[in-house]
Length: 458
Ligand SMILES: [Fe+2]
Image 1: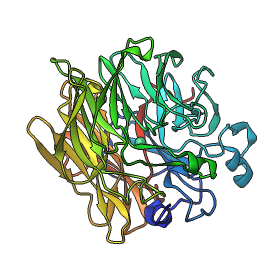
Image 2: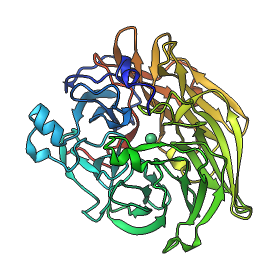
Image 3: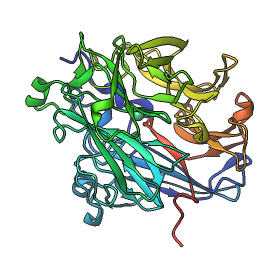
């Protein structure tokens, strides 16, 4: 049973904000690059009402999406909106036109694909389509072809325009995972079932040009917790048969998957992955010793994540683990142009204990995996950065020619900035800092969605 409570996950900048706002005339320090036309979108849990401290889990707060619209070197607007759900209708009096299936609106990632904006979540939730201005439209399982829910971490392939995903669902998919491909037009083109009798929590996946990579690691559904009505029936299992599966992307069924043994650990997020010329798969990834063991209210009190390189060898059915950076860090990202191909650079958010056994994020790191170096942007005392989102410069030929955009919570002033760093000079002064009068809570994920991908209304 839990030996902790949820208090650290609802205090400080984990605490929800109480209002939906629309703000214009935002102060800017520096110069926003004029070619940035689109929205920085970000999402996280924002509980509408008070939580049960013993049983609440950070992952179960009502979803709230935040957006900052940039155009022509200006910050046009910031707005935040709850994702529509039964609870937002009941508790906030939102219009039922925005009603979606789930009790809790998706809270884990927000993406643009095929002209639409989607809030997404794992474990059975359907994607929820949002307007350009972040109002909820409806559940949209890719033309209603998605039967069993989606994931928060589809892997976009810039070479094909497809989104590849591994989905699990409790109780919709009792003993299997589903590998789902959505085409560039926004409809499902492929589904492959993968037997997984332990019902593992498969938060994310890795993708290479040859393989969809399945991470079956020791966090899974505990049937006793589920039967007892736990809102979060997932926990760490000792003596688990941890394994990584390589499923060929062109497979029509699971018969050709190669399972490779790995020493027990957990990982939410690969940074990137790629095939090697000798048939192996490289995955750079943030790794925890364990999660959801003693701390069943969130991920951080059992262990904190560091950065590893996994070499998956289908010839030996083994995964070799190597520590790349033992300092604690999460939310790894790469440039979109090298997704699922060999990368040189990667970007992460530092993870730190704040002295009260609470976990915060601090610096923005840039890793050079060729020179084996790390550069860091220190955002200043009391300032905590979120996930670093990489945006390539138009026409860029160098992998790190672009910007890193991140939200930064300023605990001194109890509000947030959006900071645009020059990726080639990450330790230097930001290109621009857009100052918000409000706070963006520590949440999960976000993306820069170009107007070319999801255009504004005419
Ligand atoms: Fe995630």
